[in-house]
Amino acid sequence: MSAASTAGRLFWASLRYAELAGWCYMSWMAIRAMFRRRLLPEKSFPPYAYLPGRLPHPVRDPAGHSYNSEATPPAAAASLDSDIFLWGVDLFNHGYYWEAHEAWEALWQVADRGGPLRMLFKALILLSAAGVKIREGKQPAAIRHSGRAAGLLHDLQETAGHDFERALGMSPAALAARARATASIAPTLQASAPGQPQPVFDFILG
Image 1 (cartoon, one colour):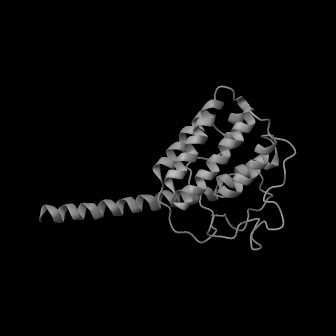
Image 2 (spheres, rainbow, N blue to C red):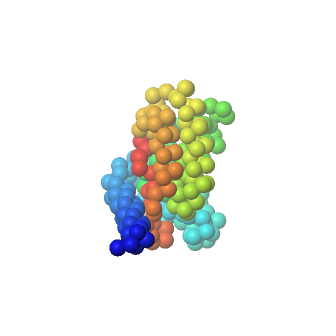
Image 3 (cartoon, rainbow, N blue to C red):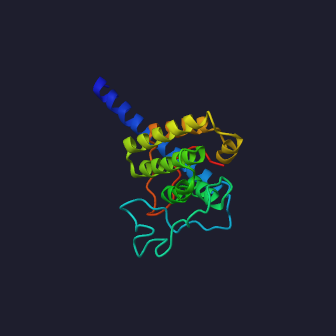
């Protein structure tokens, strides 16, 4: 067998292995998502997970899942114990990244400017945006968003109390490292039905 033929076989074998590894990874993620704990089990998830340009905009399009209503009602106060924060965690953990972004943005808008809570909500918003970009196959944007989130989370490590670690399920620094790693790997996503949520991060918040 010629060297060229051997090299070709090795190339296609390695490509097939990479595809299989990606499929196994995403299948494992989908199975994990089915058994992820719900913080607000009484709330129903939206009928679809929004991806820009592929599905009706949730609040602007008459066919959107939250049309004529707000995706998330205005928050009265910024709190890690609020239903809005917990709802955002549920959405994020189950692959509804645009919707999680909306939930946490409602809290970010009422948090004290320059305060640690506002910084935390901004980091979570950026992680949600990274999740959307990973699903869209836009790795540079995902790395950029996760990098900005990691920077905020690292800054929080100096001031964050136990409440932050309890709410996140890990320290801000640990979350920063895991989010950055996921975005840089660019997981191979399997084809899914339009609107089907698809968790892409290998960690669970809360």
